[in-house]
Image (cartoon, rainbow, N blue to C red; front, side, top):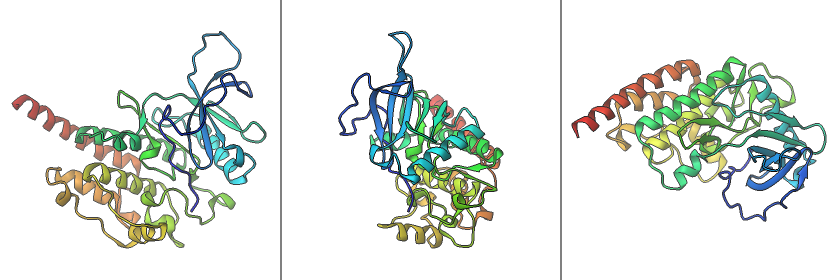
Length: 307
């Protein structure tokens, strides 16, 4: 499987020695190693030239030293730069500067304060229904922008959903993004992404993934947030792929009895094995989530008033 490890939260201790203060890469000064995965590292950085008190408000994404000449790592970096140049949205990570054709290969992005959804859940954070729907709606809006520009994300998972302290969502990592009309080597039938969140068609020889595959992946994320467990279990990529293609997830209503039926129904629609049975566009999904979000806020407000 092609994929990357989840990057830790910016600022989290990765177990690696910090970079030397003042190390310069291109026109950027590296301040600290912030996160890393199997193919890339992210550094907090600031412009190498300028006022002494300039703020380190940028993130530099670079291939790991041992993979700086790896065509796969370079391809992921180039793919993210291409997708980011094609679409801009408040809920999508922005690429401010890109150098991928020669050394030093890097992407420059805004520095984000907060944590990934994966890190928040690993820290034991409980998220109420209204907030879960709000998070999902913001992700759906990011997918809507990608779809309008002819792209799909390709690796939607909690590790790529970033939450600010105020609850603003930024969808990260466009390295696996695919164009709707893509042909040639970049569109070859490879399993890309993270197995636990991959739609059935991503491992199919007959169906081509599209934006509805991202909707399925978001359904997996929602299911886990609401049920406290993933919809499917497996010890290997093969088991997970077979589960996504053949096994129906347990009823959300049974696992979360207090969950509104309409919410459970939407999540199960998103997890339909047949893409034609899912919400067909992110816009349709956003509309459904807005209605559910309004209903959940009304219930929470009434309960607070009555309490």
